[in-house]
Amino acid sequence: MDRLFFALGALLAGLGVAAGAFGAHGLRDRLSAEMLAIFETGVRYHLIHALALLVTAWATTRWEGGLIAVAGWLFVVGIVVFSGSLYLLSLTETRWLGAITPIGGVALVVGWGLLAWAALRG
Image (cartoon, rainbow, N blue to C red; front, side):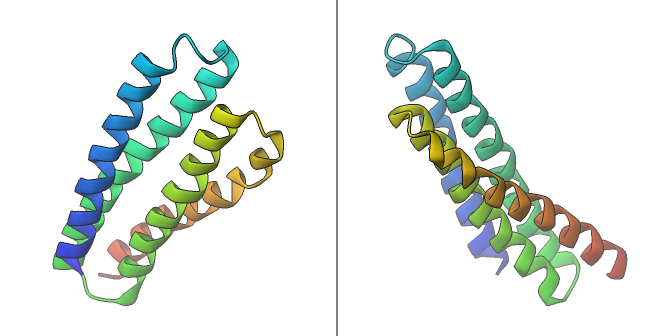
């Protein structure tokens, strides 16, 4: 599990950097300031939680238990749903996508909580 989460974290971090560069260079003149800010929020959370997956990979080598694996998968789901919905919202201006974003946010928060719980139990 440690290699899987590390690889996912590294891949998602690379995609996050690419998304940030795309936003800064490819979208600056194409999106409104509001939509660009939404895109940048998606990138920020994407990158932070890609790093969280690297931490999760390390944690799997330190403590046993399924909580860490669940936390890692919640980070993956959170990146896809939270950041993905913000990317789509900013690119398409389809406002209802904003209703999906909190689901991804909850996944991220619960992931951090489970990671903390696993550490305390470890």
